[in-house]
Amino acid sequence: MRIAFCGTPDFAVPSLQMLIDEGHELALFTNPDKPKGRKGELTPPPTKVLAEKHGIPVYQFEKIRRPEGIEALRAFAPDLMVTAAFGQILSAENLSIPKYGCINVHGSLLPKYRGAAPIQWSIIEGEKITGVTTMLTDVGLDTGDMLLRREVEIGENETAGELFDRLAAIGAELLKETIECLEKGELKPIKQDEAAATKCGMIKKEDGRIDFNRPAQRIHDQVRGMNPWPVAFAMLDGQPVKIWATRMTEQQGGGKTGECVIADPKKGLFVRTADKLIEIKEIQFPGAKRMEAKAALLGHQLLGKVFENEYKTHRP
Image (cartoon, rainbow, N blue to C red; front, side, top):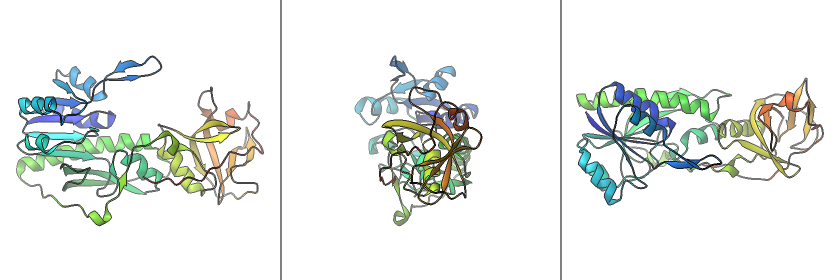
């Protein structure tokens, strides 16, 4: 099948690799190279790197819905479009070009967590189950009819990065199954329940700020959802300290919320929250490397120190 694949980040790579392995005739439509790092060197999207490795034509547009994007898409004349973390909204004209329309691979169980960062927000919001949905793309934001979906459990200590990798691989498998069903005429689109729909926005650095006035489980979920980017942080002596990993405990303790009530290189670092102590497992002080909290305590005296608290609602 002749397929126009629209995808940009790592999440899209397994799906593109699957289409390559299946022998489809492909063209990649992706976002332009972007400057990265301190030197601001232009860096290609991961999908572009893979496509060029296999000699697949690559088209890069800021907005594929503009005339030049529509012209390139029309010239390729795809039977099908596939989107996976593309990061752009397609127009009705884009969607009218492929014979069989457009299939999107979305990292949540729709209609929950429509939007840009469903994997992170599902963890931050304390979900126990998530998954991948394939759907027919329309002009809305993840509002099209659902095709296939697969559920997975979220591990109690699983990070967004770990879940991201799992769902990317599952997404590729589900896309393969969806295309096979399309070719056999076996797809049965199901409309989304608008009453059950939720939206999630892009993750911002400030979303990572920890408020120890919240329950320990909420903080633990926040830390997991912010790993590997942008990384949760707490303010100490006016400086942001990154919190990479935490552990739930059943320990109670005195002191103020945000206070380091246990800070021992052998026992670890435990901080008071709204309901119990939470252990900080990995920490990164300004200008220093990420390290285990026990090791960090060899060079930092934190006993009795209090992380600053600021009330903040954490909603998608």
